[in-house]
Length: 154
Image (cartoon, rainbow, N blue to C red; front, side):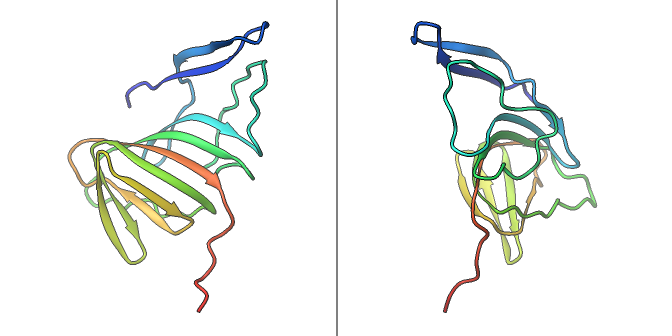
């Protein structure tokens, strides 16, 4: 996966805006079927304190923290022949923006091909990401903690 540069703003001792971090994001993990760069994480209402402390640590779980969010870039390699996509579900509202390549969003009832520039809003449903192309697909995800999806009322 390509390196992702993370630039974070803050305030100096005199209250002026400044860059407090500008480097390649160090929070890269490899999972069973993708490489994940966790860019930002917060619990509860985000704070913008003067003192800067990197909020991302090792072993960030898939869902966001309670009343929080996580921002990450995921690179999905082409699926291995005979392999299957990782089906999962989180109680979160997820925004997915395809930066490069293409990937299928696989749901219980069908699938949709997403290409660079497409956005998908994932609302707490069971899903998988399946890259059937011959090259990696890079997706930016913002996951926000949410109430569980409830069945439609009728």
